[in-house]
Length: 396
Image (cartoon, rainbow, N blue to C red; front, side):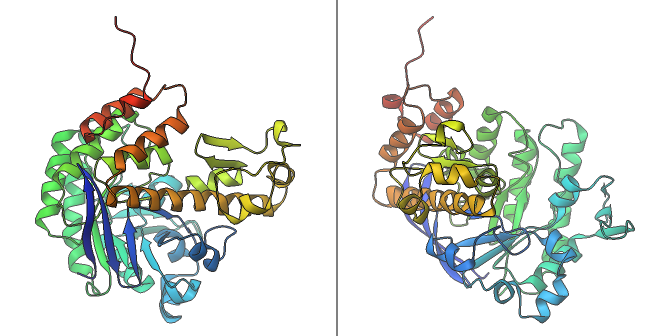
């Protein structure tokens, strides 16, 4: 195992930890921006260091196609290739194939898909996914799992969960660098608590360095979403990191952290920036809106980032979607916001003021007290009293 996970503080289920990886000592909870092709669109690695980014996620599928894992390996691994001194995580490639490609066919052998290069059928097996990730050289690598949308029901969910457990053994056997790369397993099972439970138990028996909760953030209702997270975090080992895949909305990250999750990734903060939307404590600010044309205020008056210190909403309004600079500035701001959110979660848990932090976060986002019911339900399970920032429901 090539990691150390030391819990520094708790509040009920929430935890803040020091998370030591081969390339960096991280603090959790943490958000990982997605750098598909070894780059966060529009930002340099030194800018990402400046804003406090700790782990970047790379997409195995995209990197294997271009520039190829063999070339990355020859050039000294992805850290060196992209000039990133801190930690990296690579996904297994399975999700991209199922989401991006028509005609992906999943069998016991692996995932068969049409090559986007020449249209020929190609097979990605658990062994091949691990070999590619071993060559890329990230600090954390993900097992190939059988990916199914949570909105699907029936026997396919059960089949995928059991196959994910069979494939984890093939991934473990194929993993040649356990001393420098940490293989995480992925909990599947859709929205079925029984299947999720079987999958958690099976993965925990394999004693992996860390565990991810997969198959969420794919269109399921929020009440189902938080209940799956709560169920999995309650059964996963206390002394190992827990990663909720594909989660990037600030509200979801606060809720999942309250329920005991540690790590998150999503394209949302950078993708939404390219559409001219900024993340702010009140929620979002749409810079394309014509009301922004003569607004001389910064994007967020409370933000300390380089963008908010130097540029007005009016200036970004002119650039947004017209000039690459607009999406670069908003990407910088949005990731700064996410890194600050991660630091605030960590310090509020360590300093014993997590409930106050959650209430203050919710008050800014829902000043009328209209906190969504799913958030209220989740916070009740997390043991956090948010009554001060919720409008009481009218008694029937």
